[in-house]
Length: 96
Image (cartoon, rainbow, N blue to C red; front, side, top):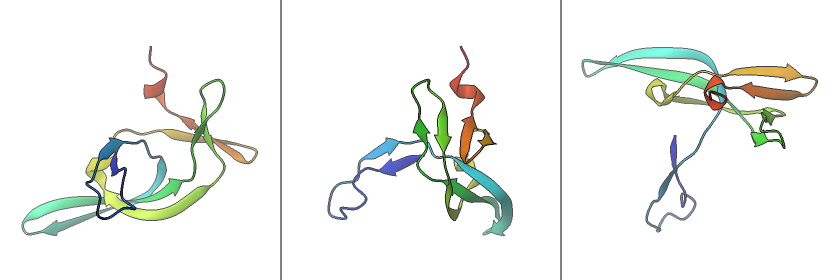
């Protein structure tokens, strides 16, 4: 998703940068509005995804829940929990 780099400064001109977010989709919500069908995803976001020295992405806990437009979801990943650490399994990162 693209986020405003200067969101905490309301008078500054917005500058959007691409940023990756990871989360667990809890469920989808489909609704009709003005004759159009829309889909939202209720996501449990990860907190502070970090890359280690061999390039593996991991996080230690989940953060907040939020509804987002399902159109913003780029692709699916899997989370593998070992002890108290979750590892992000993302096939698109490791395709040669």
